Length: 351
Ligand SMILES: Cc1cc2nc3c(=O)[nH]c(=O)nc-3n(C[C@H](O)[C@H](O)[C@H](O)COP(=O)(O)O)c2cc1C
Image (cartoon, rainbow, N blue to C red):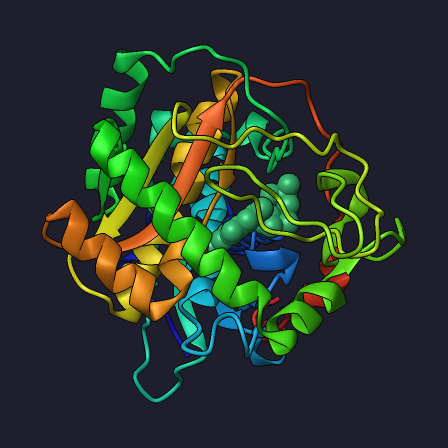
């Protein structure tokens, strides 16, 4: 397998630098890109990915064994999660001063390969590079948010970023649409929570073992307790079924908070991937501005409420993800699997 000719460093384009050094440098940048990708957010912290490092490329593969078969039968949120990982790769390559060259779904015969990435010769985007320091600071904060508006200038920037990532960002501001989201989220949560298979899957991906490297930690979820039901107008997912949640029970996830909706022009895997890239880029931008965020995806997971949401919002496109944004006290980071468990390095015969 080889990448496009213009990525392969040659003696000509590396000047006096020996070819092997340039080659190694690109490989080291890609190794760092994989480490950054492994920090990305993912649905239930499933980390449904595997990275394969070749001589001068890095591939992002789906790990189907980590798919949520009940919650996400079409793998929509799995691929959105992979999009988050891909964005982190692009940020890490930009932070090394180089341009990331990306082919999404590069090989129709290998559906598990979501993207192949090379280190290009051009300079990296300064805007992406500036996000690298906050990759490790970003997290899902499920606390109550302060009553402080997100500035319009920031929202305008995030809308532009979403467009650059091929999706649309819509701040949900009208009281009517906020009511719709609240109503449909409650219906969707009720439907999901009435399904023992959904609750079983959620319990399997929630843990109070701080050594477990995947799943959602009790330290990051509001206390709910056995049989408890959240009465928030826009409910937070009920991770805590055993009374292990460390965060205060009140998250006051309501209609007044800043709600951002990401939508795509269609409902294809490519759009799901772009949604993940947009989500992570927006999330990192918010982190850099000291805002927290937390996805609220129930109304978009249940087919009937998603269709109804689409109809009520009356906008073209397919809702992909809803994000609440605000200021709050910090929460602890959620662990990730070690890089050695997710990265396979192919031996380069040139080295
Ligand atoms: C596509 C996607 C959907 C998500 N949906 C939800 C959700 O509905 N509720 C929630 O509390 N967290 C949601 N999350 C956040 C994940 O649970 C979180 O990213 C993961 O546990 C890792 O924690 P961290 O974001 O703090 O690093 C979602 C994340 C992604 C990428």
